[in-house]
Length: 113
Image (tube, rainbow, N blue to C red; front, side, top):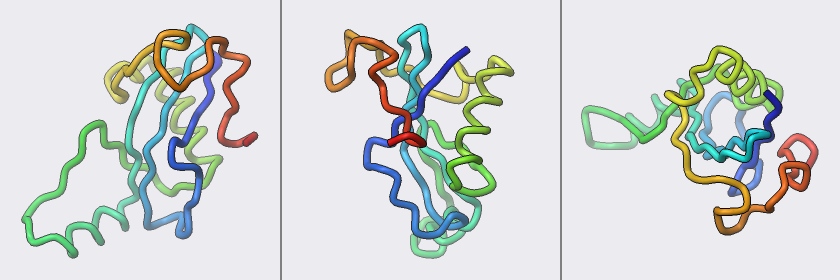
């Protein structure tokens, strides 16, 4: 299935191995999904900065790094395996969700933008 990825806060990664990003995945069937992707180093840093003994986040996914190719591969693998409905939180549909275009072809993928 075709998909496009949007980074709501723009792709501004300074360290591929120690950062996190909110991503929206839009499928060609117009469904919009959300997740936050983290690296292991980022989780470790956040644990060390926090006085809590744990770390968690809604719709959290840990990936190897935040290079564009890795993000794209993660999303593709999650869709191809059919796990995207469990990994991501569905937040709406194109044409129904404010701030998004109506047509899939009008969505600008973060790799192209």
